[in-house]
Length: 334
Ligand SMILES: Cc1cc2nc3c(=O)[nH]c(=O)nc-3n(C[C@H](O)[C@H](O)[C@H](O)COP(=O)(O)O)c2cc1C
Image (cartoon, rainbow, N blue to C red; front, side):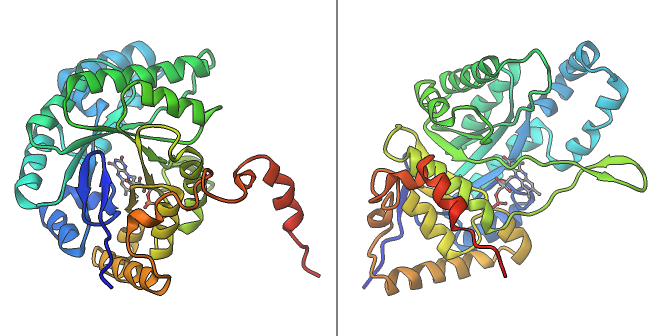
């Protein structure tokens, strides 16, 4: 029996649901090629960040002077960021080169929060050949005056501005920390998002107790992180127009199956590849085929959404009704 692994995401035909999400691998064309060789069905490049564009234009300096309590200290965070990602021009050249080098779709990633001149880079990514844009909105509302409504308005403004400036599809990658995520998703839909990528991981700093410094601490994910994504994908599937993709906690073929059954059109990997190397993608695809053969599935399409809230016998499993059941399911060890 030949198994059909194809899936559609953002209007693009993908060979399988297994895509490579933004990671340091994407900064190097040799690794972009290796990702394609190992079977990545699409490659999301690392992000071009609002701050990088503003650094070049001098806007960031002005912004920090006006807003940061300690300008010098705030500014000191940026050189490291500039060395992680390429500046705007090299980024666009890299995108062009990536497009020339691989046949799979290449998705440009724009990371920021405010509307402004910097978002014209979405257009430049389109001109450089990007098949789609992933707009990673990473905002930390620490201002005591900032209301949830204002935060969400910023998201919708940004999405509709970027959508208005390009013809290629735009997916929005964001975190889960909203009061009413389901409603937010409907508003992103109304703002024109073609896809929603669930979820950004927020990198929480740690304390170094010896030096008494706040230190960045990037911990790679494991499959446990998938649960939150499954939950929201299953809840939103077929209820909003944008395609759903999962990033965060996809490590095994079973994770891919779960993501697809929840309703994801693409399941993306970063941590697993950083941990096991790019070739690990091949194993996940082999395992996926094996799993589907064993369970007599013929296509990804057949599985998609089969465990969504609209398909399962007990949709309450996704809602508050399940809360008491979960709590009482825990048994104390003797
Ligand atoms: C070292 C590293 C660099 C990353 N760089 C980016 C980036 O530039 N842009 C972005 O949107 N996400 C970035 N991410 C987030 C990943 O694309 C992904 O969404 C996240 O790691 C969750 O997926 P995972 O559980 O498969 O790792 C990065 C993640 C890691 C670990």
